[in-house]
Picture 1 (cartoon, rainbow, N blue to C red):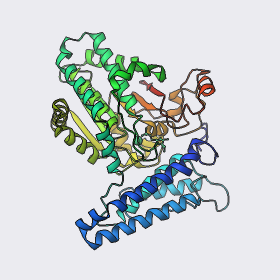
Picture 2 (picture 1 turned 45 degrees about the horizontal axis):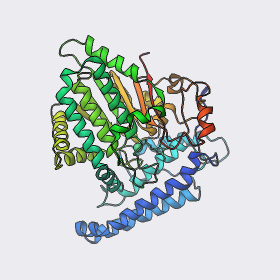
Picture 3 (picture 1 turned 90 degrees about the horizontal axis):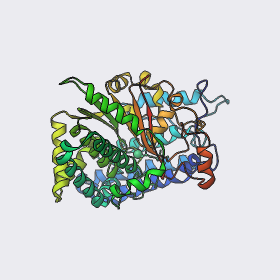
Picture 4 (picture 1 turned 90 degrees about the vertical axis):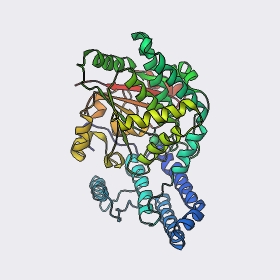
Length: 442
Ligand SMILES: O=P(O)(O)OC[C@H]1O[C@](O)(CO)[C@@H](O)[C@@H]1O
Ligand SMILES: [Mn+2]
């Protein structure tokens, strides 16, 4: 632990959300992954013959072994399969080992920091798959992500229709109306983060009602609301920028399916309102926390939308494909997002990524896991300032847009946490509450 920062959340704290996640949710996710491999047996056979069946068996046995290690709290073992990030991961394992003072103590599932072991678990799933050619490009979570998209169709159509109406009237909106729309789409993107598939243990979690109508009702559940700062910043960029100069907004994506569409709708609006001129997205290199967006999910979703029977949904898909072609939308991959590191070490561990983020005028960090990494997933008092928890991470003005699904929250008013806890003991972990937490220029 670095001087001055509190201990990490960990499965050591029996009964904590971290503990329950390691004990119940993670094994459940592993079991579901094993089941998914089973169900694709025929597909593997049709594609690869006997070799496909062999590979399926191998992947399943590796995942069963992993589940057993976890449930018996075995030591965390190094990665063996060569991949782009293997060395960095194994170095990090050694670092975790070095933090343990006891003689011969080893990092273990219920003992080490939760953020570390949870990331490690997803990286081990990936290792099991890449150790099992020829099915080494199989995404065990793909089906769930696609299901989430299909189950949210109605709400997505309403959203696409809203966006198209907005696009035709946007020229006539005055500044206040534009601001209202910005706030509305921000909130839709916030509540879109309820739909992740990790909290639900891989079970479906989609948006079945029209989210646009719910925004007003949900306002009281926003615990930190820095939307005004975001508006001032971007509106100011718009007013003061020279012709042909750039306002760049970066979005560190979270979940695919419904949430991703809400992010893309917001991105579309930022460009057509001229609040921004360029949007950069960051996704995951490997399947991650069940529902996180990979480049395949990103392309798949836009392709699906383009091919939709619904006029406005298909228009969104076509427009977005065009934005990518024209370079107004840029998608980035970086292995740092699937490492276990807190963001405060990004400038050392991934200086190229840090430098890329520094080019933004504003960075959105979507979702709970990003918040955990922003704050280091530590036992901060709820009232300490956001900036303090960031511990020097300031590539550019940034804003966390997340619903609360882990026991870490900073920057609250004195008494706010106590009041919430009194009426709802699980207020931090159900996804019911949300934040827009901004950290401005230094
Ligand atoms: O998709 P999100 O918003 O990052 O949420 C994923 C969440 O899953 C959990 O890890 C539960 O396993 C949350 O605590 C976590 O941060
Ligand atoms: Mn996620």
